[in-house]
Length: 98
Image 1: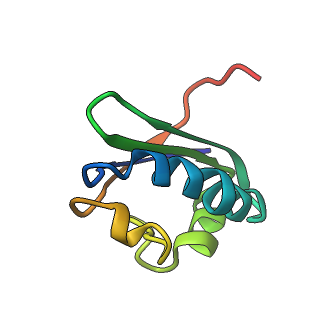
Image 2: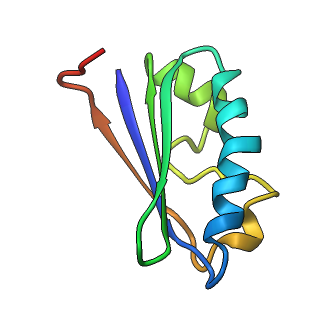
Image 3: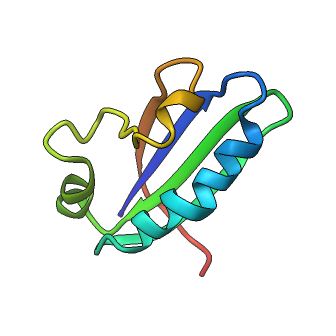
């Protein structure tokens, strides 16, 4: 399995809008993708957004993110909330508590 960590600084005042985007758009989209095992979204006190997803395998991740799967996926509804280009890091899952 693959752990995908998406992290980005949000524009000032955008935390609440990002939280709403996560609940109304991002999580339903991710839930609808076959191969997305789980997804969580968080924010910190400094205005950084975080999305952690776990994918069954690289093929499932590619179905979501496309051929440039190592790059961030930015939904049109979140683009105006971001202060910078998100960074994305991938990890091989070693262990998971279910």
